[in-house]
Length: 510
Figure 1 (tube, rainbow, N blue to C red):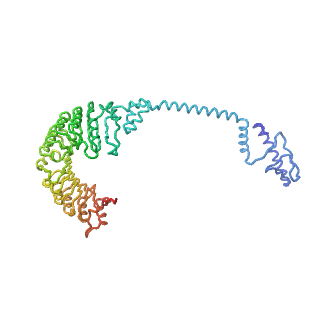
Figure 2: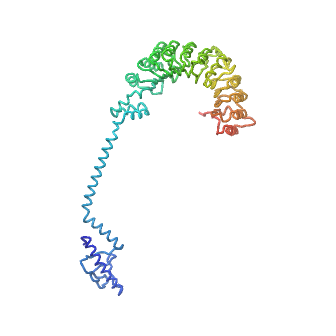
């Protein structure tokens, strides 16, 4: 048995000498070969009675000769030595190396946990992350540690809040939890700046909104919005109750810039309180469908609030005096004026006419203003409108409008940008569309509902407007095939003139 590298090499030398003598014997006669498991058996008889090979001199033990040469034998010897003599040392070294590696990893983990302690992050960093999270997620994150809880109550996270108030029996919307409302009023009412209320059609939700408004005595709001998601529930409240709650905000807010109070019982005295405290900051006022406001109340706002840039009101509040007040040198240029022309009972509402000189003065002062007009009238009530040129840019007809009125639109609205006609009747609008395309050079959007237009006239209209028509919404039922174009051909013709693929809208089949 080999005991060391020296003995191994000594045995190999004796083996080499034996192999040389064996090669000589094979040269004399090849019949004598001892085969034992595929190798030579040194110093033994062959199975067939042949002469025994002379044993090799020296202390070399009996060994099995393998192929591969001295390099392979050397590698095998080293492996054998490692198995017999170095196994314990190797296991011991491996154990020590494993322990050292584990200690190193543990030390690295401890150092990493110390340097990345989430509870010790700078509050400014946590604050920026919290700004991107919904309120519920912020509330959950605030329970991680005291530091995060302090960030949760920072004023910057409570500048803007939307109260959603509804009754589960009448609304599918999720309401703001009452306990959260209490906490906001208790801890963050003085931080609120941008507040809105969304209420459903129930009177109870509107009352809850007024109760919250009356408690905002320590805050100075910059924006306030009262939004009715269904029917105007604020109108169901007693007028004194609503005015009292709204006045609390007007008195305590000294920098109110945006006020949206559509469909509410606001009145002239409350508007005077608004102007007295926020005349220098008010820029946006939306109060459509406010029946208790008079033209004098709106005129008071226009006379005092010279920074007003956006205004929305009903047509009965529009007057020549109001347009002239908005056109004064002290007043900034108006950017957006929305007018709702609404008739609930046909024949019972009288609509006054605005003088052309008032419109001219208004457009000279604010040449880039967007004048948006919504019409919900019956055909016989359009007589005061579109008799001379007006600076309307967006026209929406929510009810049926006659061919005559649309023809006057093409003659009196050269600044028109968008036109939407919900219904017209059974008389084609070919001439009216062509006239609008000729006169309204800025028209970029048009929508036709229950109307009729021949395919030839429609193609001509699109050809005249060209690629500036960014929005073209026409129901397929509106287009009437003629001798020149069919419904299949009009798709290609319109697409060619628009410079993009276009298809008419399809009526849903449900």
